[in-house]
Length: 220
Image (cartoon, rainbow, N blue to C red; front, side):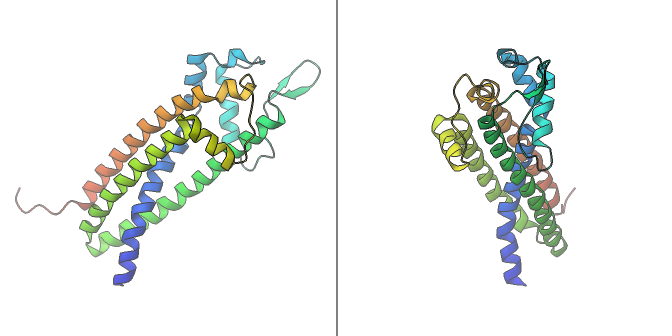
């Protein structure tokens, strides 16, 4: 039992950090408000060949990200002759790679939440509050490291090149539809949203952890 508890105390460090990081990721990249904010601020949708509004484009992208096993990424538009996709096959390949990453992030979010809650319940039943309190301090360090990694991979050219290579993404021209919509400027803005939201989620989790693990008060 002692070995099992030791293993759990180590696992909860990583599952709690994974939950905080992936929850923030899924909120940011699955929310149409984030895309709408950028599109309205940058007027990016008006720079591509489409009659869709910023809101409609945001909804279409989020619908794709939240869809179940799509065959490809396409946003169809009536040209007057036929329904054609706004984006090319190369752009579809890149968005499908993003979709796979978000699907994995969603799975990690669910699994890490279940495991973290289970371990917390287990230790709280044993009265091992100090273990949870001490382990969460390490979780905070992991989350900060995760934030730094996200900034590197999303907001720097070197980081983005590494991600594209790892995901077998296609290099697109600067004037491609997808680059104009979701290129470096969007990623820089999304990074700021992600960092702020992650810190907020971390603060909320730290507060909940404090409430659950604080020692009983002897004097009032």
